[in-house]
Image 1 (cartoon, rainbow, N blue to C red):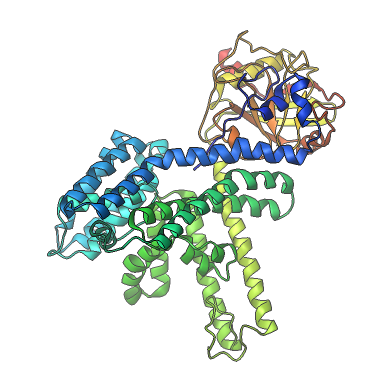
Image 2: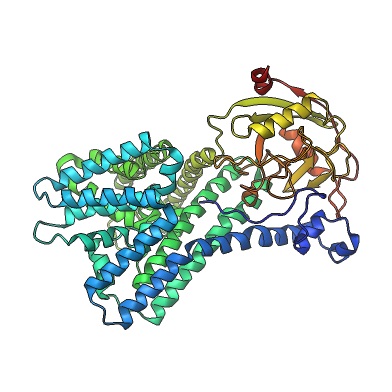
Length: 600
């Protein structure tokens, strides 16, 4: 999940007259406005910039997006507590409002599709002899169909909700006998209950029933705990979107640290979803249920700790309905393998998730068996799970050799987390199915080689390649250089106020959800608002999620990062961020031009 802030122009000429004071600081030529900022240091400006253009927009967008669910949970909680409405009517109200909100979030087609799945599962639920086989098998077929036949963008848009739905359907096939199957409306109300159906967590039918009948009572302490989860969600959100993105700019090319912080950013995204789902669920039920434990993940004694604490309801579901049903017949190894296969399946058979889940499963199994054996041989408290205070081992956990060995496994598992997080990081920054062409910018201090996305941004690439071929960019200076943010060029007047497209006017934006400002070296068109692209472009110095879907990404740096490093070091005028001395693009080399070849 990615949230974009409202970032104003990246060009002095391209600015919104309603920009904030900080935007004026960056973009205006009125030095009277700038006097109050002359004494500000760069780090103070960067903090303000992050707060106003990343943290605040991220929090506001999140609360705005999920406010219908939050409001619905509050109202339904009051309805259960303060009225004499029958349980049957409460179920009908919950189902109606939930379906309405699902349409609001996913659209009519997706909601209808999920409803058909639910109705088919209800029919299969009444087949007493075969339901434990037919329902999981039908879910598996559906998941294969979704991954292979549905458009990826559509499939990804509701995969989270579909995962929770599948988990609920399968759990009911094991929990219900023929004599206690709920009626259709109660069943659908459970499956689509809005407090769990969008982002989770999974809950059992019994837990849902307790919510309706209010067996779980509200209290002031529970309310405080519930609100605290919203605070945790917002903290992890700004860490993922803003704080860690800034840190990544300082640790780039630093062995391990760059990988670690990129993976940490991904984990913070998971924490955000888990804490937010925990807040929404607890708000509607006033329960103290936990969804995640963050500390055992960040400081993992073993990979088993990561597996069990990553998502507690999902771990319970996999353990109860998959692992324990297979363990007695097939043993631990096969049961573990099938469990991770099922986990991959309910996640939608995504290749990256499959790789991560099976890697975690293998790491956890090997580590568990290895530590169990050396713990037994050495009679030491070095197993995957921490020993109790009065264990039978001779070498207790307080002894130095035992502490040393356990510390080694802590460090090893931290490395494993960093490695596994990279898989998702590369997926987010991956450039798939785009038509590539490379261009070299020859500057006064070295070359920067770009790879263009001709299929994802055809107009921007056609404009850029034509301007390069005509020598339009020859002699252009890098007129804005903001350390840790961007460097901008592409104006032949070298004032930061000029530049035209090959059509003589502006051309429209071209956005692709797979292209993000997720790394150093992303190249985008500068603009003064929607559909106002000309000739100027900028290169990012670090991950800048707040720029996503605001500026057309048409290329990225593939070589010459050392030149980009030198550009970032150049001293600038603190008032307008223009370099103290000019660095120019001498000329440009186009290594291939597929658009020109097609047109010829």
